[in-house]
Image (tube, rainbow, N blue to C red):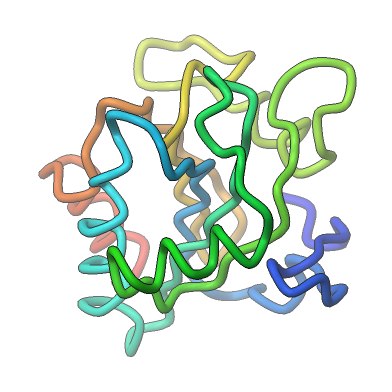
Length: 159
């Protein structure tokens, strides 16, 4: 995993993955108007459960799937806070597929899932678990944040 990738917070402040080096990360492309949006609650539960052990969810809003993240940064922040009490870091809206794919997702989409398939993000709420040593595991959108396999992978990364 490259940690020099430049990012911007939802507030527009510059940062990079370097700020999270050495932590266990769950990087997720999120959306506010998706059938999978209730996963925000489970993502926040993971954040609450593991944050004291060097873990963080990182949320990346994306409007590429059915225009399900149409809001401004302020609207996204308000929705996540009011509806799900999101306290994990959120970043500016970006593209995860196509010619404008953000460099973070250029890197992440090279990672195959459990079936050996790499490439494009399938939908909102695709998850990438990054271990403290930079290894990446991919979980497709329908894998819920409280799925036993995902939680076991988080626990292993934190051990």
